[in-house]
Length: 325
Image (spheres, one colour):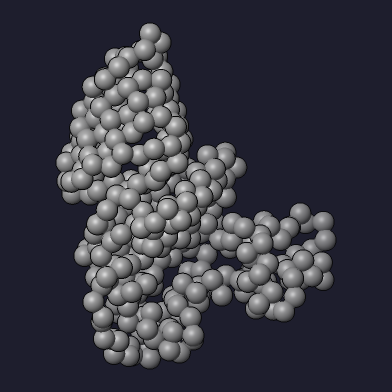
């Protein structure tokens, strides 16, 4: 059962300048409400930005031989920062000094100020609703009730984990042939980043009060969720999408899927996608150019190795055998 998922829009922007006025203007426009000023300007200032944006997230690589400060209005989205080189100071409720290798999440809902000297840094921007949905799906935290307590990760180990994870996402998005053009891959990547943020940076979901298990949903609602997943497995579905289509809360849907199917709604969705990929592998013809990697990516698996494991668990043999059968 082949599908022809339309590539997701991937927008790319680049800016580079040695003109002080142009640099100031760009920094002011880079984030809404910014007001920039120079702290030190070398004889030949440089400032470069590469941005790649999808419907699910945006990444920036910012560098320059220049010192500047920026005051900003509160952000209404999450910005995760990784300082690769230079000096960087973040003020937003508390003061955080980033050294090369450090990561941070920018506080939301408060006025911000930044100081950067000869920075080389990567940024990842993510809508807050992605993370609140992940919190609800994982632990029942109410949507809209999530807050991050600190800009710094819970430990150095988790900071290193986050740095490696985001570096992979950056490289993938910056690649002109990125698998992120597949909306299924982009959606799953955003969901994975959101879930990782919840265990990396201190937040209210880590200390949420115990919530009693929700009551069972109706059989018709559960059937509706299954039918919706099967009918839309080729779309970039979220837990919220499935719950809204079923007319129940995400938490109740999670609970009943675990009780009846020993998995989550998104786990069930992955299972369906493995089955659809199996159909494509089984119906491929010699010489038609189909590969395991291409079919896996078509169904949202950016890494062939992970798809191979999921396929082996489901069918008891590697996917290459189905392709060559």
